[in-house]
Amino acid sequence: QVPLLESGGGLVQAGGSLRLSCAASGRTFSSYVMGWFRQAPGKEREFVAAISRSGTSTYYADSVKGRFTISRDNAKFTVYLQMNSLKPEDTAVYYCAAGQSYELGFRLGRDINYWGQGTQVTVSS
Image (cartoon, rainbow, N blue to C red; front, side):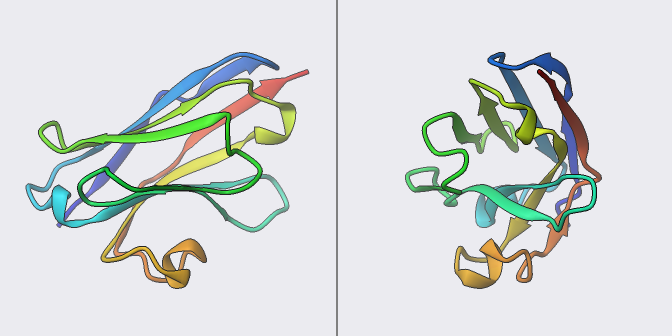
């Protein structure tokens, strides 16, 4: 198993930055594609970013491209989401996710093996 625990959320002003972390407890962490999703109040959960097992390939939603950076440290069983130039519309609960492969199912949040419990990010205007 790869139970996931997010941290790093909080309240920040528009234009500010936050770094989310997601720590996995399982030693099979490096065998999973990792990703971040978010869910704003009254909206469906949406894909934010994903990273390949080795960390060499990254994928982003258009809404965050150029502002957010996903990375991973397989030695520390941790994936990160650096969020810069935050906007009020980035306000959401952010979830870490682990899956077997990055395909359409992963991006749609369907082919996910494990979800974290979520961390709240609030961006004030």
